[in-house]
Length: 226
Image (cartoon, rainbow, N blue to C red; front, side, top):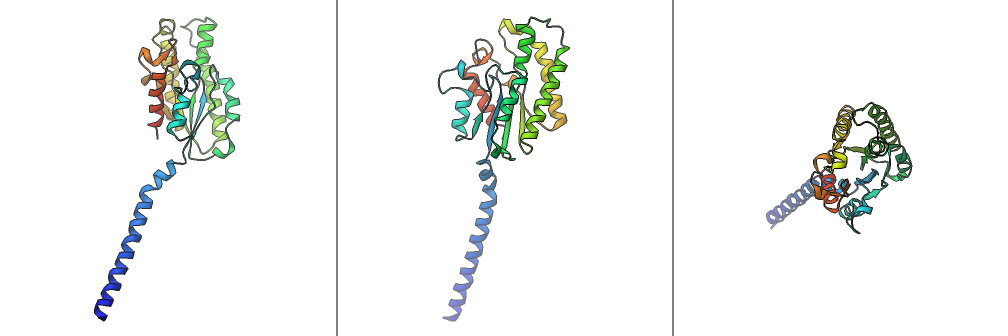
């Protein structure tokens, strides 16, 4: 009987140890998933991220992201915003998002380019203004870093609308995008190349704004970044 008793104790101890190791393994296996549950997206910028006015209810980038991230998306982007307008968006970022679980998506520069070249009808061959615009862009990024020093910042490039009104500005957009890529590479930021996501006519409303189809593609691309 004593031999059986000691055997029972031995088996019980082995079982307890095995369960302990299993729990430790499972905890480490799922800690990354647990951390991702804390992830919050902050959308800053213009109509690329705030396209409510161009799609039916519930189909905007904001709506889709809020749904798919379980309400862990905060959209502070405003349609028609230029770089200078976005500081007010940065000011509205809640203090409790100062965390390495916060990812900021920034779409900026497109409306500055449109205003200068389309609305003000400046020569599309003169790209000298881009340097000034990009200096303002970099200053904006620094302000985001100051507000959220531990956050991840993902920069969006600008897509190439195929509408005839805007095709003449593709070279300008390309120059801008190259500056974004170079700056991101030098400063450790990720880039979401919207230019490679929204490429088809039905990706756009009114020839230039993200449509419901384009918005869904953009949301898929955003979610694939983490």
